[in-house]
Length: 99
Image (cartoon, helix red, strand yellow):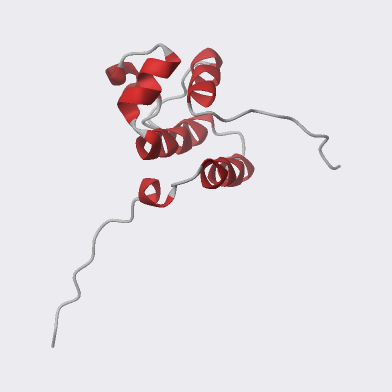
């Protein structure tokens, strides 16, 4: 019997284009159900795909604080979320809800 070697799935390896990054964030926003830490973790995945050091520089944050803010262990401030979204080259938009 042969052994199957598995590796941990890392979504960041599959976020190569701005469109993929935006689609991933959109899907996570829909699934989050108000969980800000979940959104922070999704932004962390995108930041890793783009390069954490560059995103930290563009957001005006240290690399360490960016990792902490986007770890998913806590909810970062909305100010931090907005800085990171801008540094990722993404835009936050709103639309009318249904119901």
